[in-house]
Image 1: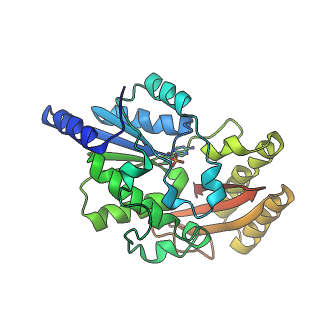
Image 2: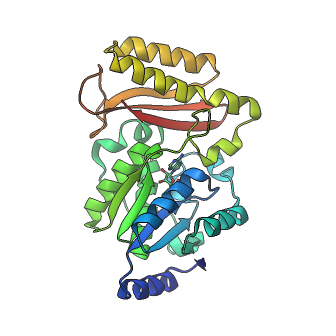
Length: 280
Ligand code: AMP
């Protein structure tokens, strides 16, 4: 695996690979890699000729400074995992490489209602930060295919909107969520859970499974939502949201229906915020 720290060197290398007819796949991450990330690398390797992974903990997408400061850093293990997965290139830029003019007064993106509901509502500015870094990364890597996780459902919709706004030809491929044996969605933030909270964390998956089951049986959404909320509260979660939404638009739903729907949960265990979702 070749490690690049500078965008111009990365771009030169990728240009050569493209001239040699290679299809370029890109997996952007913030590191502290787990098997969910590696599944994206695997998808890219199966569908492209050169896989580029980036590791960059983007300061502009953290609405909570403590979350940024405590974000896990396991770079040596990350490099080992990427080598073992057969990743071709790691892009590991410093903050100054991504934001040479600093991070004050960055550009803004018109994300419409995506920015006012669910993650957009509870993490003000988060998706602007995601777009600021993704705009730069997409231009630097200039990949044919971009692999991202369904775990961050709304983020995939935001990035899809960004690709439109940028008129960027890169194709977004959304990959399924990888879970631990007990159902907990793999996440870098799981590393910050105490052993006790790690046990409790599986309640989110239990709730999503319950919601799916009861929605498919045509239950009443307020009743189902109440049950899930109670289960989470009893396990010690502080809830940001438990919602049912149209899977294509994320418009909130008030009842289960036959159209594609997704249930989404965001909740804290102590100061660790976990998110997950499930298609109904
Ligand atoms: P992150 O490092 O958390 O920014 O995530 C980098 C990419 O990995 C994003 O596209 C995530 O949606 C994806 N991802 C995170 N967790 C999982 C998971 N459990 N399964 C599949 N993809 C994931």
